[in-house]
Length: 235
Image (cartoon, rainbow, N blue to C red; front, top):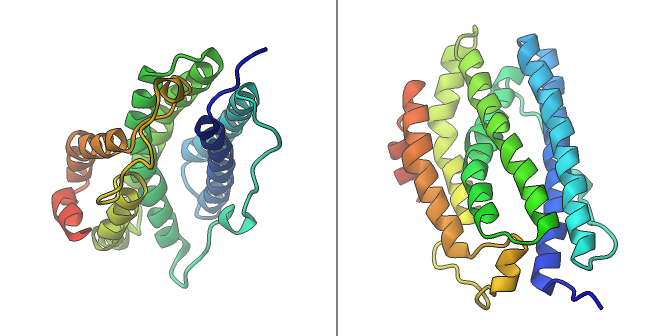
């Protein structure tokens, strides 16, 4: 009889299915906003391609979940599968999503998935991580291309001010997700769990720090934003 994967591995891959659906929905909604503000056609096409990528990631994650012995599917919270407008111009909301989800979230995801992939030995999980890692590089670049385009638009001054003002809260969210202060594993991960593509919390925190130094500081500097000041203000 084939030995099932550890329960923690099944739960994690189920969570990843949900996360990929959420990413697809958020990017689809953002792409609609890009159409509405008359964004560059190449950015719109890139957004639509990312939606297809995320759906493919969800399918690969589901295959891994099933191969691990999982049954059923994720319980999707529909209120998390859309973006919400403020009372400000739409361009401002586009900038917020771009920086929070892509310049931060997708940029750190490249390093996180690279680290997850390094210790993954199960073929079905490794294939999923191979595809995700390959695509995340393009998703990261989309975010920086989009914010660059917005900083050359008529809304440039307002967009820049939003990034400077709100970046500390975005950093705080990322740190809370991947590097919460004092967080510890309930029980240490086993080699079997890491072979299914799991990673200790300490390695998540280390990759966030590496992303900050090697990616966020220089990339934000190119758009005249002091990432160190925002990081220090994020707590």
